[in-house]
Image (cartoon, rainbow, N blue to C red):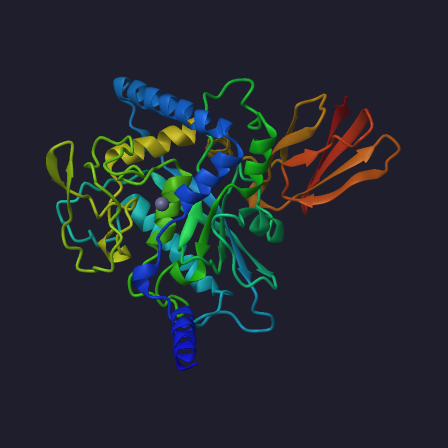
Amino acid sequence: MITLLLMMGTVSLSVAQVSESTLIRCASTEQDSLRISKNPALFKLRQQSEAVIQQYISRSRVNKRTNADEIVTIPVVVHVIHSEEGRSMGGAGNANITDAQVNSQIEVLNEDYSNTSGYKGFYTDSLGVDTGIRFKLVTIVRTYNSKSQFSPITDGDDLAEISPAWSTNRYLNIWVCRLNDRYLGTSQFPVVTEINNRTQGLATSEDEEQDALTDGVIIDFRYFGRNAEAITSRIYNLGRTTTHEVGHWLGLIHIWGDRNCGTDHCEDTPPAYTKNETTDIECTPVFSDCRGVNTRNMIENYMDYSPDACMSVFTNDQMERMHAVLELSPRRAKLVEFSKITTDELLVDIYPNPVQETLFSSIFTPNFEVFTVSVFNQRGQKVIQDKLNRTSLNVKNLPSGLYFYKVETASKTLTRKFYVR
Ligand SMILES: [Zn+2]
C-alpha cells in the first residue's frame, strides 16, 4: 500500500512538472511519417520534389539569380485555441495568450529570417544570412473549445475544424494551443512539384485537397513568442520553435537529415550525427564523426533542436531552398503572387470548370479582407451556405447543371458561373 501511494505520488508529480529535458522540439517528421503511411504515394512525391528542388537551385545558380534580392512578405493568421472560458487573456498556464505575445512572435520571425536578431548566438563567426523572407500579422482569431489539449501528430484536422484555415494559398496559418506528448510544435511540409497546367490549380488529388485545409504550423502556447508570462520554459523561451517550424513549412529539413549523419540537402550545414537535444544553454560545441570526418555540428542552426538561446543561423543554402519552395510549391507560389498584387479589386478565379467533385478558387481580397463563398442554383436557391475564407468546395452531391459561385466581402460582391457535370 505504501509503495502504491509512493508510486501515485511520483506519477502526479511528473504530470505536474514536465521536466525540460523531456520536451521534444518538433513533431514534423513524426507527423509526416504518419501522413506517408496513410498515403504511400506521398513518399514518391517527396523524392520527386527533392529532384525538382535540386534542379531549380542549380539552374538559378547558373543564372546567378539571387533569390533574396526581392523581399517576400508572408501574411500570417494566428489562431489562438483555448479552453479558458470567461477568463481574461494572458498569464501563466493560460492558452488564451495576449496580443502582445502574438506580436512578439512575429517580431522574432522577422528578426530571425532577416538575420538581425542582434544576438548572433554562441558563435560569432556566423554563417547566417538574410533569407529575404518577412512576416506580417493580418489577424488573430480566438476560439474557445472545451478540448484542453491536442496531439501535434494526429489533431491537425481537429484544429482546422475548430478554427478553419484562412486560404492556405494566401496566408501562413499558425494554430496556437496546448499540445500533449511534450512536443513544442509541428508543421506541414509543402507539396513541391513542377508547376504546370495540371498543378496550377494546386489540387491534383483528394489528399491534397485535405492538405490544403491543414497547411500551416501548430505551436504550443508556452513556447510561442517571447517575454510573456505564459512562457515558462527556461530553454525554449525566445520564439525559435516557430522559427524552426516555419522553416519546415518552407521546405527545410533538420540539419542531421532525420537519420544518423543524414542529409538536409544543404552543402553549407556540416554533417551531424544526430539532433542537439539538450538543456545546455551554454551552447557547448558538439562534434560528429560522419564519413570518417570530424566536424563541429552547427548547433546554432534554427533547424537543429538546440535551446532557443543557441540558435541564430539560416545558411545561404537553406535560404536558396526556401526560395525554391516558394517558386515550386503551388500554394506557396500563389501566396507570393498574391503578395505582389496591389489592386483594390476583388479577384476571383474558379477551376476546373466544368467540375465533377471539387471546385477550387483563387480569391484575392484587397487589404486582406475576409470573404464568404456561397453557391446558388438556377432557381436562385442557395445550395451551399456561406463558407468563410474557403477556397475549395465539395460539389459532387449537386445535380448536373449551371450554378453561380458568389464571393462577398464587406464592400464587394462577385459572381462566377460554373457547370457541374
Ligand atoms: Zn523540426
